Image (tube, rainbow, N blue to C red; front, side, top):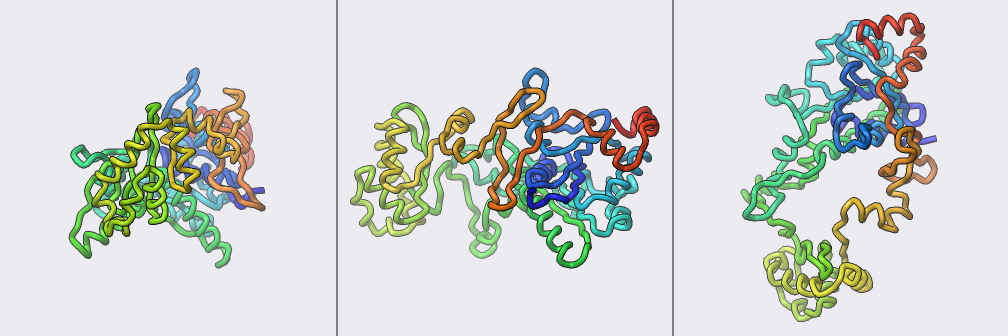
Length: 396
């Protein structure tokens, strides 16, 4: 029994923020109905690697979700959607602004049917403003948020992440927003609301207070590679056995421990060493000291020595390293989940642990329309009518 047991969610969203938000809600007990186009399915099914033609990412992003093939722009499909919305607590969608309204299933219509419905609208730039109609993808938010401008080598181009950063941050934010709206609804007696969430705003927050710094000082941050303007030493360093480790010295005491460990306690007494931002001005000097010490030792030797000294370090992991890491496995950050196609599949576990209402992976991502008959039967639609709906293209 997860904390969201009894909450019904309609996932009418596609790549990637909305589906991740609904994955999180499902992980913690919500009943999630994944709505896909009857003919094309969800684009997430084609994202990422596949094995023997079976999409791997889908197994995780669509876990704990029943699947329904439903055309929302088909009149009969829209009727079914309205019937589902009457019984739902949450709807998550990421169509361009105005699309649901054009199909006759916008928030005003749905709230007449179900005043308590919480509607999460995920877009690139929001429901209002001059960019509201632009196509919105995470890459664009990563560019506009300041992330790309601050990422990469100082003399290199702005750098984009190799994964869905903006979408993932927005998806986690959306799950938080739903929890707030559910709490507010229960506290105030059943009132739903519309949550307007764009991909840009959460990532802007994650990047930090650069707009405030600019407004107050006129300064614009620049790329510094793996270094930081706030502290040093802070970088990735190559080991003797050609692995990489990352060192952080955000705390003054940690910085002092690192320099003692690598054999340069004399720098601790320098006036500039007393604060992170002044240490950062001597990053070349500090990196040379730390880097040469690390380069003379294997990764295991470096990590063991840093850990014994109480200094902050982590190996730079590949996926293989994560899978083999004893802490990751012992704390169940990755778990084996039964799956119809693969037998078992290794997945990220639920994002956090709760002592009395823990989350759970009940089943992995399912086939297109696997639960259509069950869901429609639950609406009182008989088998004969379901066949007619399939023939018309309204469902699959």
